[in-house]
Each structure stands twice: as C-alpha cells, then as structure tokens.
Length: 401
Image 1 (cartoon, rainbow, N blue to C red):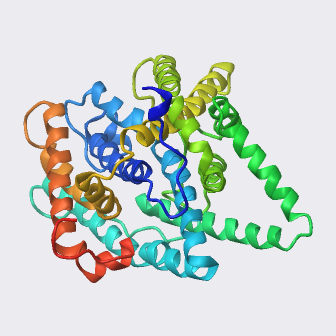
Image 2: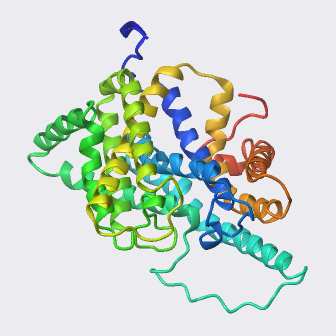
Image 3: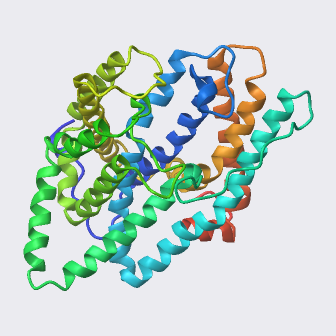
C-alpha cells in the first residue's frame, strides 16, 4: 500500500471506524477463547466442562488471542475514554462511565453468577443420572476470593478511570503541568514508534517473570477471582489504558501505527511460535520454574502481546477506515455479547461435550450456537430497548443502521 493511501490523522469528532471495529473484535475474541476451553487438554483442572477427546490444536484458539486481546482492549478503552471525556466533560464522563461500566458490573454480576451456577448444576445433574447431588455450602465471600468472573474487566476499567481522573485533577492544579503534559506527549511519541512494543513489554515481562506461581501458558493473570488485581495485570492493563489515553492526545501518531503493521505482526507471530516451542507445544498446568528460561518466555510473551496490539491496531486503521454497516452492527453488539456470553457458552459446553464426535466440530458448534443466540438476543432485546440505551449509550431505531 502506498504512502498516499495511509489513513490521515483523525480530526476532532471524526469517528474512527477501524478502532471501533477492532474494539468489537477484541471483545468477540473472548467468545472464541472461552468456547475453546472445554476442548483443550487438561480442561478438567480449570473449566466447568471437559471433552473426553480434547484437541491440542484447539488450545491454539485459546493461546493466541488470549496473549493480546485484553491488552488491546485496554489500549482502546483508554483511547476512547479520553475521547469521551473531552466530548462530555469530566462530570459527564463520570456519569456516563459510572452508568455504562460500574453500574453494569453491579447489576450484571448477580445475573452472571446465577447463570454460571446454573450451568454448574446442569453438569452435576447430568453426571449424577439426572438428579442434583448434595454439595457443600459455598465459601464465604472475601476480597481475596470474590469471583468477579469475566466481568473483572469492568472492575479494572472502573479502577483505571478513577486513577486516571484523579491524576488528571492533580496534574491540572500543578504550576508546572504544561511541562508534564509536554513530557507525556514526548514519551507517547517514543512509545508509538516501531520500538514501542519492546519498551512497553519491558515492565510487563518483569512483572510476569516475578509472579509467584505463574502459569505461563495462561499468560497475564487476571483478577477474575479476587478484588485485588495481580501486579502483572496492573502493569499490563494499566499501561495499556494509560498509553491509549495519551495516544488520543497525539492522534497524529495513528498513521505511523498503520504504516508498520506488517512488521509488528511478523514479530508477534515469531514471539508466539517461540513461546509455544518453549512450552513444548502443549498446555502446561504447573507453575513456571524460577529459571532463565522463564525470563526468556516472559520477555517474548510480553513483546508478543504488545506487537499483536500494535500490528492489529495498524491493520484495522488501514483496512477498516471506512464505515460499514455490518462491522458497525457487530461492534455495537460486542459489548452485550461479551457481558452475557459466559453462562451461555458454559451451558452449551456442558451439553455438547457429552455428544460423540471430534472436539473441533463440537468447539465450532458451541461457538456458532452461542454467537447466534447472543446476536439474536441483542437484536430482539437490547439494541432498540432501554437496555441498549443503558449499556451502549443510545437506543437504535427499529431498523438496520
């Protein structure tokens, strides 16, 4: 592609269709990741259902997107967060994100947990000849053991918004705040260069390699079972969010990301392949040893995560620069799909793993049925209703748009 076809720097108020589509893709990949988990080797140790004949190839459907998708999501969340803050003002931004993120977490968590427990009960009944076996009472909820489930991303987003707005308020009152802002812009310019993934990967690699009982195959540990995010999660998602926020200040840097997307994806693929080779090409369910090999793996994993993020961002800016109604519809639907997908996926897995057949076909069946159900529910019950106005910020008219 010639330099004349590079996307121009977006003007204020211009919709970035490529980044919109990419944010939706990052969320929809969560459906792929979680649908794959029942069909991976060793699933009995970490998931609600497990196929009797798992496939190592399906593990790739988990491993590759899991390496980068939440780093990518939080970068875009920071970018679009600042865009919204500039458009709505600080007070309007707090109200908007409080309603569409924090309140969704508070209201959605009990419903999601009910769905997960129901799927667990269904599996237990099927294993017990159709009757529910006795089970011990659940453990008491504590901050250390609180099951945020996949909604942890809303919790971490809330923390990111709170910390960023607090820093913004403090810096804005300092007499030397213009100097700090110029310094931040200069750092962002360096991080948005071709060397950016390596620079951003450095603190993440250190955090991963020093994580106690780090399960290297599963990458960045997430706070899905605790209100205390692990250090590696804070580093990965916090730095991605902050970089995305500052990147919106320097929107003229976006064409540079688009220019080097091929090289970044080549680096990402190479890092991914080497990481898989270091794991022996298989799911590893024991913590990584404290040895130089683990440091090498952590460095390559972190570089891979950021290279995928840069490469896909650049590719999306190039390929999806123009509006497209189908991509826009999927981007709009992706938030609902991600919020609601775990109980649906788990219930389907509990049923389908018991059907004879290749794991690959069953994985595809879970994925397609779940996507159809979730897209259908979005079109019927969300997009044009008050629920859609709540979580997406607007109600769409009752037509394709």
